[in-house]
Image (cartoon, rainbow, N blue to C red; front, side):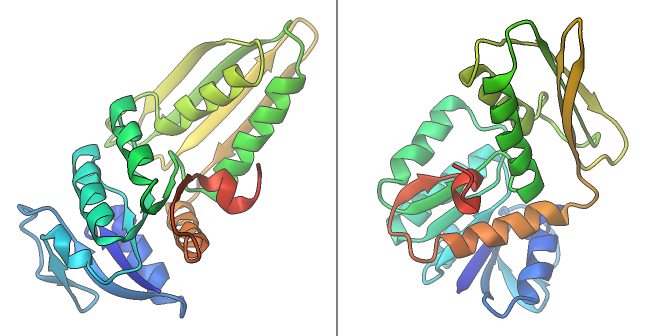
Length: 237
């Protein structure tokens, strides 16, 4: 499987390169960075490109960048027939609709969190929300490193939507913390006068997102079009 990796010099990009390089199912053919990155000319022996058109001939582009870069690459992939795995966060509703439109032509896995464990958390939140009586009050908390720009996180927003779409509960509060180098913590608490139920996930390493992205890439191999998320990839729906 020929893959391209966008944002190749970022923390996620570097981990995806490392893990894909250890998997015989993948051949990294293109590495992308923004035009003004000003970094090394190559990574892991592969020349770094700034022209999105260089993804031509690739099977899949794995994208963990900015919303603006993602939308630009989305258009290129749509024109070239390249599948996409999108883990970019902070996308607006309009930008998500652009992804939905592109998915009518090319297959895309788009998820606010590529972690297998977090997607199991999503499923548990769905079960809890649909089962817990209305007497519970729902709150959430999330914590990330100081470099993360969006708050609440895309994962927290997804959890909120899951709770509210699968019950009559309204999430009363989302507490966001930006501190140190926290990779990602998320928790949902259902509290009543009688008891308290808490489900949570703690990320120990960013490799959980890279592993999930590569699992998603393999999922897309036999797909011709359509928009999928990690729940689809993991068979949790």
